[in-house]
Length: 632
Image (cartoon, rainbow, N blue to C red):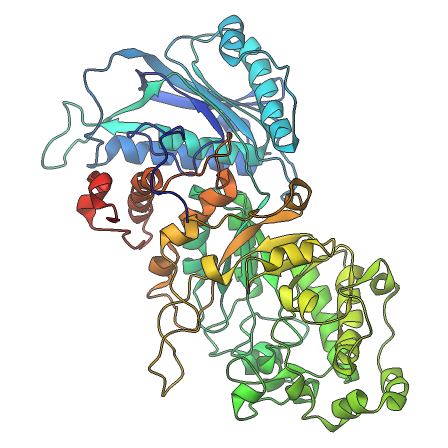
């Protein structure tokens, strides 16, 4: 559990509760006022580019437009920040923010550079006083500091070239850094009621200002993979819900939307190759995701720096596939369901049916073209061997080794891609059941590798089965936080989503009819979410194998009516862990009291955006969090 308070950790001013907290920042005590004609200008490398000529860089163009729209809302809203001290002197008028970016068309992929340097001063900036403020660049750099240092050098280069009275600049290597820097700038800007404001709300024109100037921020993410998983099979979520979720994710600098689009209950993803999968497997004809829907979600995410990572969970969790093609599945709807599946309805792909691989190959090719991300989640969790043993053919394969070659001879051969750089998950001989699982994995993974995709699997494949996986395979940990170390010791990178901290669906009570007990997993409040230290008990070398993490929203008891309140603001708590880390630059734990003050403001921002975020405590506590401490 994170400490309640820790005076040793540097805090942000109360007027500017930035979230997530930047890696490094300094600020002063003066105030800079945004002029009525404040503008944002963009320089691509050394070439200054006006906003109107950014058509070739639509992601930057739209990011600037969104920032200006949000500033306009602040200027014209009836909710000015009454906490601002009117006695603080105003250093100067801020007329523009100048952005410099070197690589404006960088790929949106794992490991993309997202760092930025943001500087706001109350005096016109020159190259000489910027260098004095920034200090020298003789650092001993680690990987993360390299990214900060890179952004700082860009900032210095920009400062030398600046002319006029501009006193705010944002410098980044890529357009993704621009997105994050503009989000931080928007949060720095506060509104103050001006004399032209009226009680009736007519002619509202607030003063926009940046308190506590000068600001100097160097920022970069602690982890490259910062995600949210949404299950759209157990309940369908309209595209508008997903778009709203992506928008909220961008405000807290999350960058991966893990779309668990298919599962045993329904198959809502339209397929051009096998349209019957949706026609017969979707919950309803109007609860599907068309090809255009998918494209719009991917495009909306990209505009906000969010990768859309699809998951096609198999060979378990595939009862919905069998509605269209019964011959590729076994034990569909078998009872009692608990003997054959984690939850109803039961059903798994048949790994010895040749048509299974015909369908899968066609789908993998279609998915690879539809989803541009280099990674793909292929599932692999909760495989039930009892289900497979209901098939005479599969049982024969398990029980009679002498029959295996004959049964496998009827299947398509394993792709050469699927035979390269394979490594066993554990030492020792395979069980008969795992040999059957290997038949499926060899062919399915080979298909993804043929499409140049990097597979991600759930932890069971790596920890509960003795199988061969490609060396490139990434493993998502969910059952126990301590399992991360076991997988890293196999030499495999991990994405962390421990049910103990980051399963946001837990705690609503058991849902099977006839149950009156609690959920199988307990509710995690925002403080528990915030306390997840992803690298605890890992050596520095092992920590490098942690790609990041994801909160998970499984949808057994979540639909459009409660999606927002189940996700937010707890997801924001995880977002700060993933961007800023659980500890500050000096290794001190970030305290809950500071986080509570800022998270309460995050929740207000989300509500203003139209996100129905849940409160974290009574509204009185948002003004007096120190009076709402748990008494020892």
